[in-house]
Length: 355
Ligand SMILES: [Zn+2]
Image 1 (tube, helix red, strand yellow):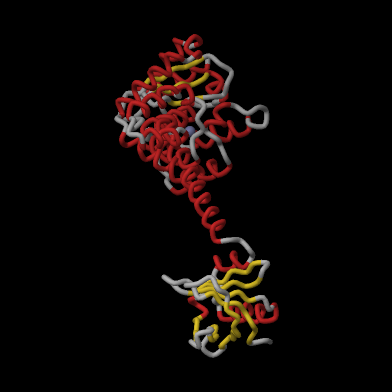
Image 2 (cartoon, protein in one colour; image 1 turned 90 degrees about the horizontal axis):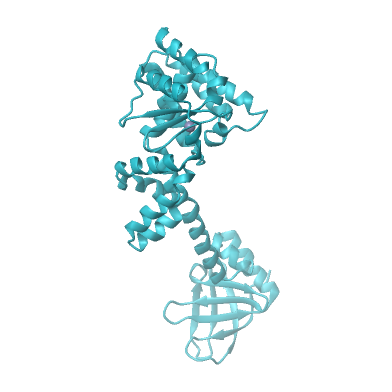
């Protein structure tokens, strides 16, 4: 172990290098030396910024007047580094600097990381929360315009639509706005909810169902998406980057225009796991409120999941059915037991829909 060596000192006032003998005071944990003017210097190690470069170990000290020492003696450098490591003077940023990464680069990486995190987490979160600022009236306009532009309009099954609306009228769907139901002729196993309360159910998904309780489970789930404004929240989330810029520019019309231009993506939006969970849990409450067998929801999910191996139905892409969701519903059935009744009228309407 070598406790001292020759080094070069810059006093911060002049650019003249001074040859000095620098030593490590193990007891006081400081770097000591005498400058050419005869003054003794004692730099506590915790106050020194160390920078390991190919040219040697560089030490900076001072706040207003920054003084500098350059040490080239490798044995002495190792002694200092070892000592710092033992005493825990090397923080994470100092370790990076010791690796030869400059402070500027660390700051740049830090800023990039913050921007990245903002883009991935903070802005979408703000976008989702900003839904509260958008009047619910706006959801109604959006849903209708998207609905009118939709190609599925031409394949509506009007008698089944009527039956489904009568079916839904028998239920308490805990809705705050009027819900409208439409049955579309299509083999797609799909159902989706528009922000204005239009709930579209494809004949393909009805065909897969075995009993009316499954349909109540589906309607309860979809109604919960509407009740919680999930479509609008997801849209704001996915467009949050643009929305954020518009908000910064104070361009409220721009915000509305951006949402308006993207209405067609409502149907293809995939709900977050959190929203699916909320719709399942609220959907379960709807089954309970209507005294309908809760097994219906679990049966529906299992059927949809089984179907997943054949093709990937739309319902699964926009409402991914996972093992977790089925497990969650089964747990609810076990823990929140209630008495359910037979509903002959629902059964009758369901059979009409199955025709
Ligand atoms: Zn869903």
